[in-house]
Length: 327
Ligand code: FAQ
Image (cartoon, rainbow, N blue to C red):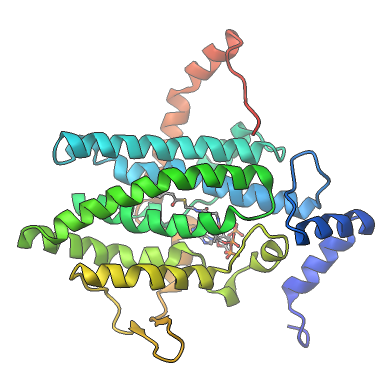
């Protein structure tokens, strides 16, 4: 910090100075008026760069996110649940396609994005680097990770970049089905036999901290929030979204007779908000650096899919049937 000005403020101002001030003022005016920015509109280089980074990471999270639950398709209890899980996993892969399309409107090709994922250059959500050990894990993922994703995506669907917002609106409609499916599975286990209750409680205990991390580092450690909120790409801060999750979901979890593995968790009578213990942020930074329990396995599966699918893409290109739709 230099007085009340942070290094990030200085870097952001320097980037802004590279831009034509009249175009920049017009662009920011549009954003202030709540207008959408479309692919062919003028935009600052940093707006484009930030959007590509964020949408690409989001797209990767969807295809990688299909993997932990996907491992349970063959073992799902009963035909009805197997079909529902298969449809969910398929939806998540579809969300990735919508998001890759939105990112492509900004000038980065899908091939470049996939390549950056499999060489470990691009990030994806921390949560998908943990194993789904039991059937109850899939229930907790579908209920609480989808709930977290909905909080983030409904908020940001009111943002400034047209193609991303439209993709988020479509995705959220499907995520709401996933959430109901996940809740139904959690309720079944929580109201089932002692063994089933134990299984869902144990899954919740393991997933709680990764879910806390899902919303991103605390605001004071967030690198990109300030500029993204100024340009209405992020419509709420990491801490505000995390708090919204607590307000909406802690009561629902407790209502099911499940406990939350945080001794510091309590409702603050003065603020009406939930106070909670700081999760282990070192673990979060290790996981997003590539050192989580399943990072290597997740990337290896994506690399295999890329290699084994190469002949299909080649064949489609030869028949001219391979077109890349723009959002
Ligand atoms: N995981 O400055 P900030 C889903 C990184 S979709 C990994 O605060 P920002 C559906 C961040 O990239 C889930 N990395 O960053 C589903 C940055 O690193 P960089 C994905 C994270 O961008 C459900 C650094 O830390 N959703 O779940 C994470 O302002 C079930 C500094 O952080 C989205 O992607 C993290 N959790 O805020 C699928 C939504 N958090 O790039 C299957 C769109 C932060 O400088 C089953 N993204 N980092 O190297 C966003 O809203 C934002 O990017 C945040 C992070 C809020 C995630």
